[in-house]
Amino acid sequence: MTEPLDLFAEAPDLDTIREQAAACTRCELYEHSTQTVFGVGPTRARLVMVGEQPGDQEDRQGAPFVGPAGRLLDQALDAAGIARDDAYVTNAVKHFNFRYQGKRRIHETPKAPHITACRPWLEAELAAVAPQVLLTLGATAGKSLLGAKFRITAERGEPRSWNDMTLVPTIHPSAILRADRARGQDRDEMMAGFVADLEVAGGLLVARG
Ligand code: URA
Image 1 (cartoon, rainbow, N blue to C red):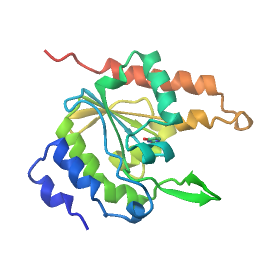
Image 2: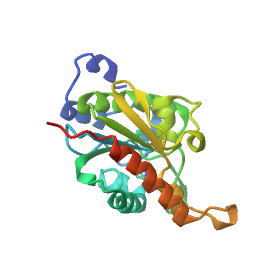
Image 3: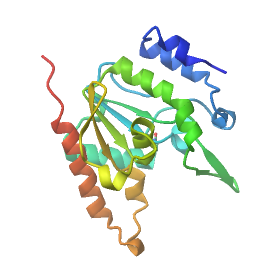
């Protein structure tokens, strides 16, 4: 098993953490996924966005948010006036958790032990990038950084201090993709709420002198 905590005492840079994470066997998810999907973006980004875990496309391509949820995230960031290229984008869990349905790989929500096993990588990324603002997308990312009691519906859009950063929790873009009218969910309304949360995060960014 890789032991990143020993390494992290040295406050490593992102390249070192990426290299270590590529060989991660801290939980069983590495066994069936294609690769570790590490974060992408500027080393000193002012904004870090944390998703849940790579999906099918991300697992194949080796980069976060490059599939359908990523395209919706891009639209929302555009609407909120945030340039994705200025942000560092990563996930709470860095291997794809799925089950087979025939030949299709179906997303499975990561379990608490997967989140715990992966947290040292996320913490190391956050320490290396040291952003001003941290945006968690969905319940898994919120729970990873705020604990198991985190509740997305009650806490979204409300900034709070997290170490030396300001954390803004919001929903996951996949929730909008899955919006279900039968359950009273309106896709446009959900998108507007998501953009509003992104605007809260964007409004907290301070220009660097
Ligand atoms: N969903 C996530 O949470 N992360 C990704 O990278 C892709 C989809």
